[in-house]
Length: 28
Image (tube, rainbow, N blue to C red; front, side, top):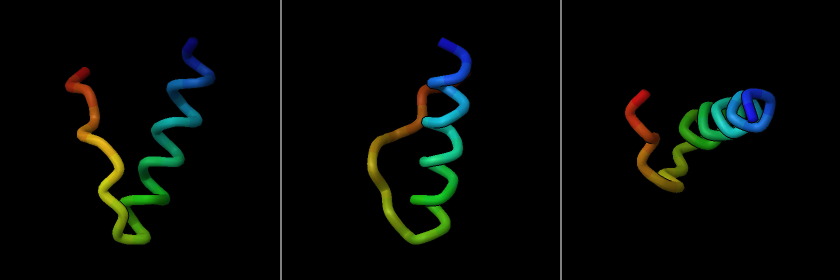
């Protein structure tokens, strides 16, 4: 699911910007 991955990436970017470290991003 590319859309889901995009949303996850966006969420991770926002979380990272906020200072959250949810989970290690998969190396792609």
